[in-house]
Image (cartoon, rainbow over all chains, first blue to last red; front, side, top):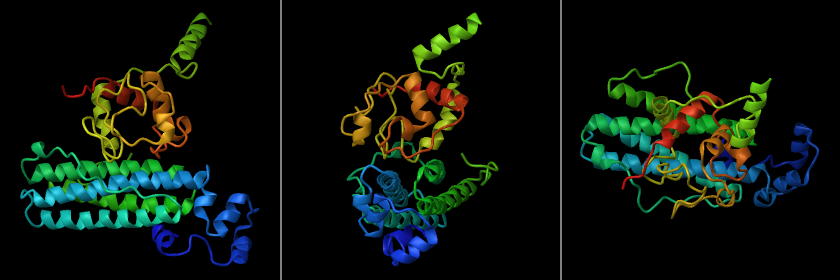
Length: 191
Length: 125
C-alpha cells in the first residue's frame, strides 16, 4: 500500500474478517477504531497521530519545494533543457504534496497549507548554475529528511511510501548535480 | 577511578550520558552536515522548521511567528550543547509530539560538529 492507496482508497482492507484472518492481530481499541474508518479517533495520542504529524512536516517542505522551483522557473536564469528539468521536478513535488495532503486528511489531520510568502536567497542566485545548485541543496536536504522519517513511521506502509519519495528526490539531486558538472552520485550511501 | 567519578559527575551536570563525554565539535564539518537539514531549515529564515541563527540560549518554541507543535512549545527546553545533543540524538523521544519526525543523528561526533556550527550561527543584525 502506498500514499496513493491511503489517499484514494480505503485505509484498511474492506473486509474486517479478511483483515483479522490475514493479520492475526489481537484487536485493540485503536484497531477497532481504524477498522471502523475512524482514523482520527484511533489517532488520539498514538502513533497514527504521530505519522500524520510527520507527513505534515513533509508536506510543508514539499510545498516549499514547489515554490522554490517556481522562483527558479520565473527567474529568467534557466534555459532549456534545465528549465524543463525544473518544471518536471516541480511537478513531482506537487504530486508528492497532493498525495501527502490527502493522506493526512485520511488520517484525520489537517494538511499544512502553502505559505503566502517564502524567503529564498534570490539575491545570491546570479546564473543558471546558482539556481541549479540551490535546487540540488534542497533535494539533498529532502533525501536526508525522508531518510530520517522512514524509521519513525509507526505504519510500515507509510514508511515504504516515504522511501519511494526519497528515491525520487535522490534522482532529482543526482541529475541537478550532473547538470552543474558535479559527480552525480558522490557516495555509495546517503545520510 | 577518580577520573571515572569525575567524568560521571560532569556528565550528570551537563546532561551527557555517563562515561560518554561529548567529543569536540568541528564547525566546518558541522556546516557540511547542516546540508542534511536544508529541506526544512535555514539559518536566517523560518521554513518548514524554524530558523537556526541564534539558536543556543533560545527557549524551544520561541521564534516569533513560527507555528511550533504544542509539544515543542511546552517542552521547557532551553537550547544549549547538552540539550541539543540529546534532542538531535532522538528528537521524537526527547520531545514526543514534535513536528520534527526524524530518527536522529546516531553519531556523537556528528552531533558535536553540528552543534559547533550552530553555536556560531548569529542572526543578521
